[in-house]
Length: 86
Image 1 (cartoon, rainbow, N blue to C red):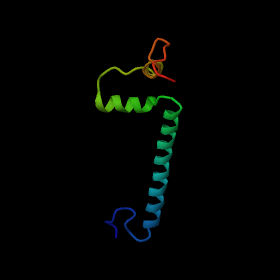
Image 2: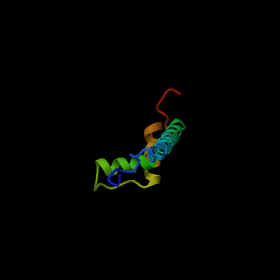
Image 3: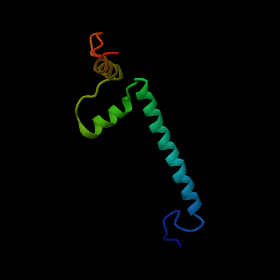
Image 4: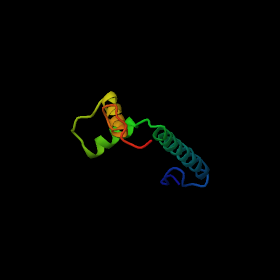
């Protein structure tokens, strides 16, 4: 079966299943880490960069410091004022 893609032979199926499992665990770990960062209020600069590249190519990108300040201002109302009840 030389024309079969990798993992399609009976001997290759367990190997492909193991690769798929490792990839699923790694993806889950990335989502978990992102969720935990968002829960404690740390903005995700890598997600911002990916979004900018995908949806706004050619536009300037904020530095991490600018991005962090922008997210803090959006969260807390800017200028040191908290604009929420708690």
